View (spheres, helix red, strand yellow):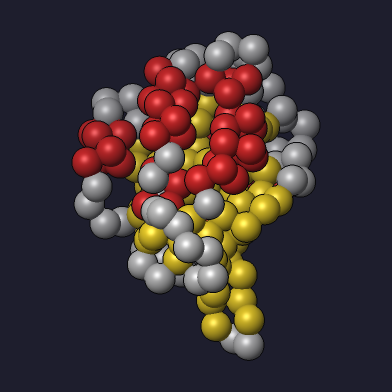
Length: 179
């Protein structure tokens, strides 16, 4: 049975760091997906970059981007989702990458503004593959539905578990019968 894990936490709780550490701990495993990170100027957050696990990166959202959509003070470039995020996920969603692990950071408002991304996430959660994704703690109909799935484990990321969690998850994902 595939593993489906949602790492839930508030902004700044370490979700991205935990997912990146997990990816680094599984070098022999064929993982696909993406992470996001902050863009900072003069000590202030001004945007977010999306980076695939293969190393491609582009600005996803920035205070200087016009949008639409806009999430808070950031304009979001949905074309980045189409150019980078979706190609990193589609092989697993279409069955071209059986036995793969998909890492997604994150199922947040900026990413979920892309309808095609939502569709691919639904397909991934129905496929016979392992999925570990980070998710915001606030309520949202899309992510709330994923959290309620019987086959999905929600792990709350806290200061107490965030350092050990990537090691524990890597051990689970490397367990018997796994790549």
